[in-house]
Each structure stands twice: as C-alpha cells, then as structure tokens.
Length: 147
Image (tube, rainbow, N blue to C red; front, top):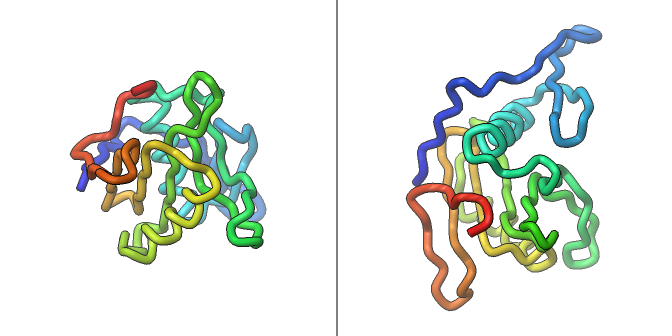
C-alpha cells in the first residue's frame, strides 16, 4: 500500500444553492463536492502539484465503451505522445479498495490499455506497473511522470 500525503493540497471550494462545490482544475468547472469527488480532487492536486504530472495530459471522467456499455473512468494520465499511461479509479473514503474495485479498473483497462493502474479511496492507495502483463508489479510509491 502507498501512503499519499494530501497536506498542503488546497482545494478551491465555494457554497452554492446550499451545496459545497469544488473547482476541478482539469475540467475547469465547479462540481458538487461528493466524497468520491473529494478524493479525486485531492488526488489531482497531489499528482499535478507534488509529482508534476501535466494537467494538459490528464483526462477526468471521460466516457468509454466497456463490453458494449457506456462507462466513465475517473482519471487517465497520458504520456507525451498522448498514449494512455496511467488509469486511476477513485472511491469514496468509506469504500474499501477490494478485488471488486480492481475488477472495475481492469474492465476499463481492457479499453484504455495503460501501463500503470492506480486505485485509491484517499486512505488506501495501490499502484501497479502493468508494463509486462506476465509480471505485474505492485509499487511502493507512485511512478514519476514519464517513466
């Protein structure tokens, strides 16, 4: 398991219509702050501010086809050639990271095909290097961008 330090990650928040909203710097819009969105936005801040993953090569909640169904991945980070590099699945903090979570990510992997897989609920974080499908390695820290 990997520990992510979200300290010093500041989210832009505002109140609107009795709801807390957060500004998504990738999608450039205000969103209702659900528990899962909270995790996603802290992770975006961590990846872009602390690890310097490029905002311009990060996609959030894009639709894909999985077994004929329309699904949405949480995050995909692309490499500098615009090839999918890291697939991310975020869960609410009260949802444990389990085999079910991994299977959800793997169903997206069949369409998106990324080298790295990241699963997090903000408390539990796991990242795998799937560059060699015959030897998937679970990492102890997130890879630097561009590996």
